[in-house]
Image (cartoon, rainbow, N blue to C red; front, side):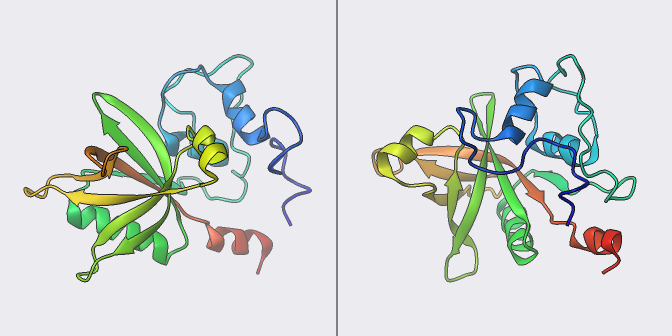
Length: 197
């Protein structure tokens, strides 16, 4: 319904060209090739909130391709840190129950990297025991293994301070801390209001 009003990059995927996503290309063209935060990038694209980093490239793109849909102060993407066992489980369960997209930021040796969670498994106590993750850097793995997401076991530290996932080629020997979860809601109520539904 919004297609005639949308003025952003082509949203079809894949496109028949080397850069398969015009939305991804929009981010590349708008910002320096440096680290930033996924939630602020999403909120720039949807709402036009300019992130503090990375720096924008000239000519400046103000984003906000859907800002006429959402009232001032509404942001669809939020970031949650301090992921002890309880908060990790509550955040993912709430997101799954409300049809939200889930991003995950791993923290390792002072570096951070964003990925996407596509699903979860639960143990007999109802706690998350495995997550299914797609990593935008794993395209070569996809082409080689023909797998789009990978199942990782979850580890909760004994002190209840943080949550990790186990990865590695030999029996999941490496634990990587999950620094943040980022959830993105559909904003259905605002779309319905916009269209008078």
